[in-house]
Length: 342
Ligand code: ASP
Figure (cartoon, rainbow, N blue to C red):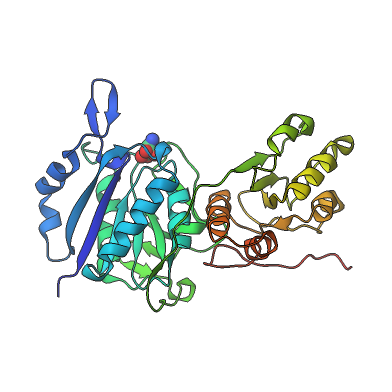
């Protein structure tokens, strides 16, 4: 039987029109392009209904409010469709995919985000293939996860990250294998795909004051002391290598102590594309250990941000947020132990 997919257009390059000021989203434009694509009428492609958001957004403007809308729409229409495809700008697609992976608990159907580097309206584009393959996987394949499809690969959404601003292979999943590859055939990598959940539950998010701080040689921690107020609920450090950070003559210790006193959750991720941040692997992560920080292991920054919003929205106390931040909830992290003998 021909399956049915719900296609939600949030904006982004894929559906943009050429205007005198450059590419820009235009209401109704993608609907008219899709209606001219005869291949979409093929029996091989699932039937789909298009929902166009208003306004259509460059994904730089997509955040918690829009994540909630997408998740609510999926929840509301869940029984009507075999899967969902979300058209989204590439810039923040990995953040939205991560957020949806936490909000949509116990998924039983595919939710696939895709987009493109060149819009559908151009003769030479990556949009057509991304759209068609995403629709086929969403309709016909058993992948009960929030995924991101781009450049012939299907990634777990909370493992994906944008790695190129201008190549057609714009995403990667550095710490987790692709869930599927679309070559001559679409091949699922079943071993790494999650089991389906039971009944979908929607966990809504709220916005919280959080921060991401990338460490660099010569960082003056004094400058950041002011942002570490009691209003800051969580801070993700993008530390060096396996979770290391310069001492800066005690300045680091002061800001970490301040964060701990204020009840700010401190999460340590790595600025490397691959591998894990693990507090305790090197002495240079000692200050984090003393401040009660938690290891983010191999989580992407996108997943760490979304997870922090998610856990803070649950209303847990700080110890629970810390514990769950360092627990694998949706396949977003690989837990490892420090190699040093203690
Ligand atoms: N600026 C665009 C966006 O993220 C880029 C894209 O769609 O690829 O919305």
